[in-house]
Length: 212
Image (cartoon, rainbow, N blue to C red; front, side, top):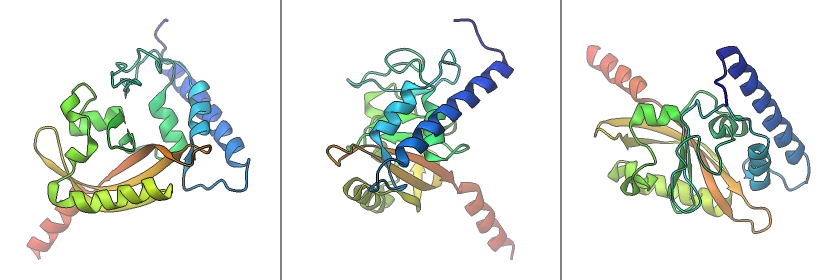
């Protein structure tokens, strides 16, 4: 497939966002039991079905069904701009995004997540998102995560949690978690998360306090 120039890429993303938003709106309007606090699995499937191929230009990482990475542009999800679809359906456009299986296995990392924190889906030892949380903050994080799995309801800006980067450095995050729920079973099939990094804000606050 020929490479798209920048203007064409912008147009393609705009069309993709419109299609995903339209499908999402239609499904959310269908049924009294629908809640904005979670995402229906069929909404996600419909959005992926209407995704637009951009030639893998985003470097998105998406794992396959059997724990094998599809390589960001190759495999079952190659024709879907997964990152933009997740952003449209969750409403988080400018923050690092991740998706987890209910067990905590990392299923998806946005390009900016990998760039900023150093993690990619190419190592089995790095597959569990829980291992990235600072140990003394893990219990609190697990409480919030378990509640999302059990209730099927989203949480917004929970934390803060210290996050351990690939290079051993630390950041401080507030996390928003949205479950994807299978309507037939009522079970959560995955959890989509977005990261509000407040590390610099805290550092500025500490510096300001020291100056005073």
